[in-house]
Length: 340
Ligand code: NAD
Image (tube, rainbow, N blue to C red; front, side, top):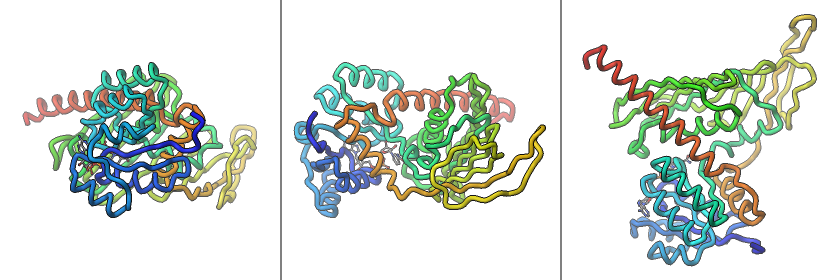
């Protein structure tokens, strides 16, 4: 491409799109063009507040841009993405990627045909707590994930699996390098029309099991993922942005910088005595959204594969769909049994 900066605009400036615009203004690799929103009043308000240009229609922004960030409701992702790719524009699409797998397949096909970059907004991959794990070899036997949020009507147009759990699904799929063998899920709709709480047990072909819980009606916020593997227990706190590790030291565990590390004592394991160690990894001072968008621009400039590809977005969507089907089956069973 040759250029030092990518000409980029944002479509949809609701809650998250406004933050995209705010962060893109700060990305050195981006020439931020402006925004478009179907709600002209909202667009004008955001334009005024952030001091950024507002495009009157989508074709005008499409024409000016090399890349677009699509932050509209999920039902509209496909059509914007299709038009942008057809016009030769790179795209960043918020999660969930599309409504259906067929739509995801069509975007992947178009992206390949046109040799364009597609990145999906699975932002937790850029959470400092996850970035701190990069030097470690994560090969879990068991994963426990909890994502509990207070109730907020925003996002309730889709089930909690597509709204919140999909973050953990994507992360788990990025760590466990094995196909899903089977899964069993249950869920309940308490306040909204779709499930507000869900739990799923995913078993992978390599034997790893992930127990994933998501709720959007929790009194207490919690976003944690815990990995259990033969040499370590790793706990990730997404809200606090840090990770900690308990491990039996054999000198084979490599870390990045730690800001707290001590020995918890010694234990006899088989023939050997081993140190039980605790390490709290150093928290990187990174804004996940800015970093995610910056890497998207770099991906285009350097012609590299995106950190979160369209194939990753499709995989997360497929597993989310399987979870929703399993919840439906379980709900039918429960209704029959309880004569609800
Ligand atoms: P929102 O309702 O706050 O904002 C959506 C905006 O899109 C509104 O301003 C609306 O006017 C505009 N819009 C609606 N239809 C449009 C159309 N056809 N063309 C142009 N603009 C249109 O929603 P939100 O919470 O900002 O969510 C937007 C997207 O981001 C969704 O896909 C959601 O799943 C995703 N999201 C991702 C995360 C994350 O953690 N990555 C968090 C929240 C939302």
